[in-house]
Length: 219
Image 1 (spheres, one colour):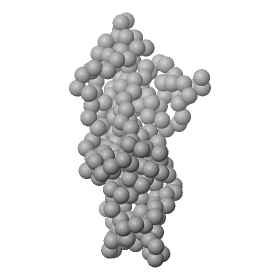
Image 2 (cartoon, rainbow, N blue to C red):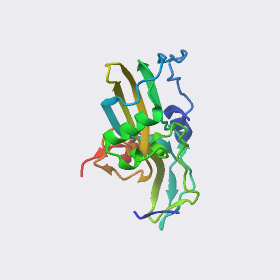
Image 3 (cartoon, one colour):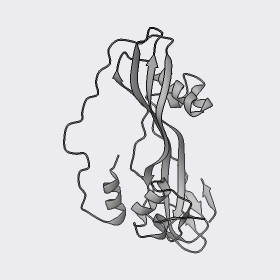
Image 4 (cartoon, one colour):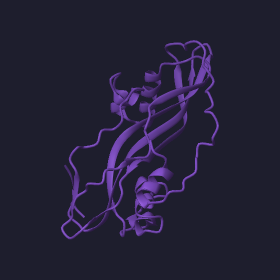
C-alpha cells in the first residue's frame, strides 16, 4: 500500500471509535500524591549517573477506521488524542539541579546528539509544545479499512547527581525524541510488531481486538 503525506483515556477513545459506552475510571479516585519537595540548589559541576533508562514508542492518537474503495483516497478521519507527551524533571530527594542540564545529560546518555547540543533544543524544553499535525491529509492508494495513528518515542530515566563533597540529588527525567505517524489496514496483520507497540494498540482500539491487525505476526 503506497502512502503519501500531504487527553482522552484509552477507554474513552475505544468507546468513541467502537461505539461502546461503558468505561470505568482508571485514576483510582484519590487525590494525586505530591512529590517530595527538594531543598536548596545542587553544586554546578556535579556528575550524573543514569539508570532504569526506558525508551519506547507510545501511542498518542488514533483515528476511527475509514473504508476506502479501489484506488484508495484521502484519510479524512483525524486521530483523536490519547496521550499527551511531556518533558519533565522531578526530584525525589536532595537539592535541586537544573532541569535543562539534567535533560541534556540524559540526551547524551541515550546518544541523541541533537538533543544534547544546546539550550534551544526541544528535548530539553520543559515547556515544549505538543507535536503539530500536518494540515494536509494523508492519502493511500489501496482499498480496505484504514487507520491512521500518531506516536512519540518517550524516554524516561532515573538519575543521581553527585557533587564533589558527596552531596547528591536524585530524581527522574522524562522527554520524547520522535514524533511519528503510522497507517495500518485492519485486515492485514502487522509483521514483527512487539506487544504494546503503537500499531497494535491503534489496531486494537480502532479495528477491534480480534482483527488481524491487532495480532502480532512474525515475518
